[in-house]
Image 1 (cartoon, rainbow, N blue to C red):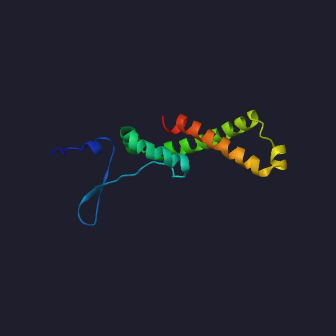
Image 2: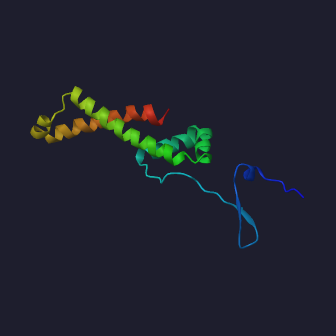
Image 3: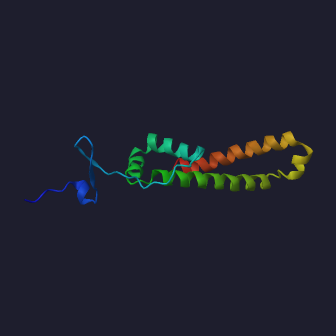
Length: 126
């Protein structure tokens, strides 16, 4: 007598007999450890709210955490690059920092906010 395989078994899945006599599928996600921060979290919320199909696909394929880690890393690197370029373009130097620290902080915070806005629109909300 031939036993029928489930779709799960045809795809290579296996089952384990539990103590209660019921077979449970052996599910293992091959995801990286979540280490994403602010920008990965923002991307996750955006996908959940505006791209639920892509979000579900990433979850089912076990690629969500790797995607969020990558977005977070890329955003942090890109914000640093944009911040440095804007500070150089606008003449925000160490000399200003030495002469008027509060003005330097004000201008750098302004630049960082603008850089973050640009990068978020490029990488998170796409």
